[in-house]
Length: 341
Image (cartoon, rainbow, N blue to C red; front, side):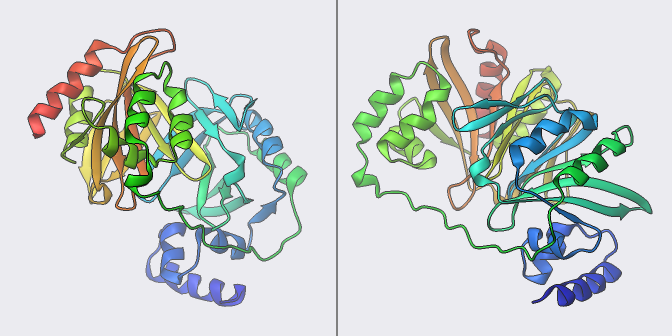
């Protein structure tokens, strides 16, 4: 399908369904969202100088940051802090906007101009090599539109057709090839949660595969109904939590309380002023309570996976390095585990 055909079919879809989201329209057309954005008049392709673009974001003022995967959407309002390069990633960290950015998963960027309810909207949208969104930044009424236009002018790139390719997930090694005893011993020797990914890589195990293999007090599968029960419980008890949702190029984190929890249209939602979470409960294939030892004691999480074994979302009690996990979080998890078992 060429760009003219994409535009014509998109016009027909939007005429039939005003307000349809770009992601849903792309699915109807059988193309990626990145291809749709690239083919839409008025949008500007940006040079893939992603680190420099991140450095310009604080000038935009308060914006809406969105990171999503197939089953979860994570939205945070705030002002982007200056990015901090780390080994293998970029840290974008403040109380409101908290990201771990992995630029190897970023392939293209666009400045997008469209309308909603008759009002103009402006955003920066970033896509991976398959044309799937890794991160979006939407301007708010209080955002600095002039700073947005300066950013677009600085990074604008000649228009060209977006080339995409499927990204195949690497299959896990068979269970019998994993040193399960060694994995469990290494798990029990952890002193920091940030050592977990390196441990998985060292043993060649997938995350869900590792949970299944270690079992025995470190990882326990629980009913999928636990997420709704947990969010309602921590909202009622005012237990501060951390919520992680990732794409192929970003992990976005909320730290703090959640207050308004509601289910609607197949989605489980947190609808707070500075934080929204939307979770497709029907796409949650497995839920696990996971315990990792650290120098400050065990850290406990609820981890959700889809049918492909990919992480949907992770939930922790809010904590800072050097401080033990809050007993209120452990009690909350234990309470809801009993209630759904």
